Length: 447
Image (cartoon, rainbow, N blue to C red; front, side, top):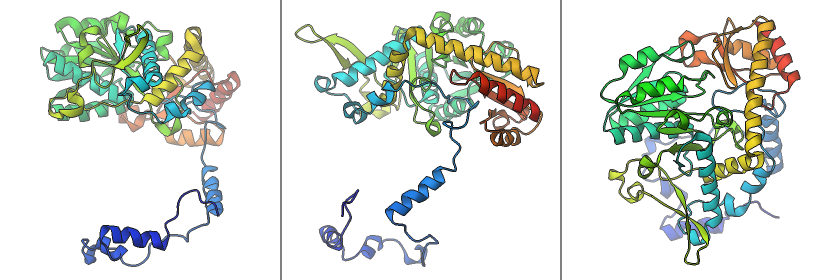
């Protein structure tokens, strides 16, 4: 019989026990007091044969609601976008799929070049001087940006807008505790950061101001005004952005941002239950030696041929942790590669067209919802998300929408009781006119 794995025979078990000097399996647990050990048998069903087990799990999987069969209007940080078929083909190649740390440049040129191209494309989108070779995800990148700002300015207060994704703010708060930093959250006004309150709370100890553009509610922030306030007393301006939106919007770098971060998930990375993702981190030349994670640089060898190497690495992040400016020395190279392949396949004009379709289709859904009597909470300019008032529990509305064949939006009441009854809707380029029309009609009938 062919086995998909190597089974352990009684002989194997006996040999292993003899090797470690144990008489029986029971000996392995002899240090655990008998009074706290479980007695009896677990209430588990009998083991199934492999074909039966596969059939059982297929049945369970079939009960799941998938975006492959059900149109989704759920975003809130994870979005369904077009992924060119070449993406999976490239990242499934063994030389990329199994690669991890390219410390030996002489045998890692393909991996290093792929990362370098990712950095280059992120710089073009954000309008910044340099980018690292990716981080774990957007929230991690945002927290690292705030930590860098505190270290660079030698100040202890971080001002973060409540229009920043709540999960990103939670990660920031967790990091701030370890660094003994003070995090102050700025309220919103009409769906964007409250400029008046920001000015009032801004002080001599402010290390940075952190905003999201487009923000968590889908609205575009007034970056020019925010930058003016932030740089009035040498604090750093940190902007978190959806990279696809930057295919159409003026990049934060042109507004004077010191650090631009975000999640590369919109490019080539499937929703896949919320992860793994790939965070990006872009900044200015002034801060290049403070950037967390890895940087790939371009150079030439002894023969004048172009090559790529890891560069500007702070070794403290690997071997002298007590002096490290960051606890991150790894990255998401495979997902960064997926993003690079997607951006390359789609191209500059394609990225701009994708972004344009997101804007237009979201605007079209707004229009159709208004026609069906659904209230749009804010009339601020948006990218591909906006908030509606469903006049009741969002969870119940979403259950009814699911019965109609749609995955509804995000329940904002989960994060803020004051926003109960409000739903965050997302529309991407993959949604069709027919899907949008039907969704608007069904949601209108429910509210």
